[in-house]
Amino acid sequence: MDTGTVVTPPYVAGPLQLAPFRGLRLDPSRVGDPATARLFARPFRSVAGRVRQWEAQGHLVHEARPCLYLHEYTVNGVTVRGLVGALDVSRRAAGPAQRAVLPHEGIHPAQADNLADRMHQMDLNPAPILLVQDSPAQLRQLLRRQREATPDSSFVDRAGCAHRLWNLSDPLVLETIAELLAPTTAVIADGHHRYAAYLRLQQRQPGPGFDHGLAMIVDDGDTPLFLGAIHRVLHGSSVDDVAVAARSVGIVTRPAHQAEALAALSPGVLIATDNQRWLRVHVGARPDRVEIETLHDRLVPALGHGPTRITHHHSAADALSHAHRDDTTAILLPAPRFDQVQRVVEADRLFPEKATSFQPKPPLGVLLRRVHDEGGEPPTLPPRRAKRSRQRS
Image (cartoon, rainbow, N blue to C red; front, side, top):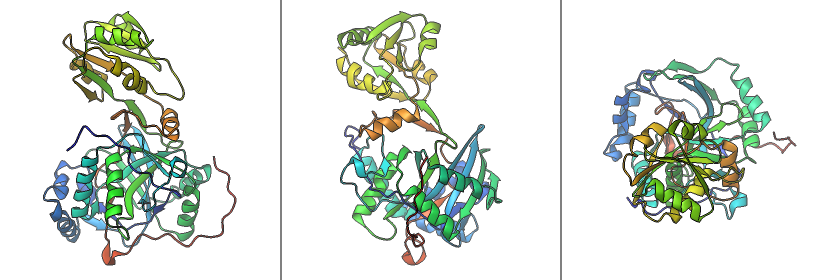
């Protein structure tokens, strides 16, 4: 895999469309079970056959008719709801103004190729990519009304995650959802490489099946995902190197004791440490720029030594555990806010690689999509009515 090349994935043009599809659902007793991973194991060309076998054995349920799905899951007290459907990826945007799906990180082309080959062999989208948006108030209200009905499925999986699913198949409901989603955009929270793989598959084989890819849209105004920072460790660079580099580009630093430094971690302030010396790095809080951009765009290029490599860590404790020598420095970052992420992508900028951690992600196996369903029929939307004026939130 070429890990050195990072590129911007192509842009999907609006309108934003989620089409109904015939979902495949693992038996609840198998969701959250690590042994289920063997369904998707190598050789990938055998996965389609395994899916049919599991379906015949009752381990997989294939929905009788195309639906959109409202999936609610609760992990460690955090509840997330998302609308799951087949995302239309058949149109390319000519420019940023036409975008419907907004990536916030670049991708490695070789990794996207690898995933595209894998999905082509499996003839399966094994998990939805995760999209986030501030949905229109009317859509939020519509989905709230749908939740008043009894869920079509309700269970607790093997990992203790509680799930509720509603199958949305009423033509009027689907039409209204399509009208409300069409003018909106959504940010990719998780699944940039799978998104890029969808586009590569569609380019290779346009038409029924690969014109769509499985996606879940979460409304940040309804059930916001937890958005955490991903910290850095600079290998080959010392705390002194960081202090000198900061001064050279006009960034103020202040030494501190450990407790004082950790308490100072906040918007506009990074912490650099080797667990012996602690440094507050004041990069400034700006609504249109995120701290990690300043780190990678200004501070890292100014370093006099290294870094020979940069590693990424989802917790401060993990980053600190790797900073234990004079030439290995942990950089602790404040968590960005979703509105900051939106401003960056709307300005057509990308975050540095592995800059955000959206949690919790939907567990594997709750909803899968067979790319070429029986008869090769593409997902379809109901006929559109004449447009009515609607006010967005």
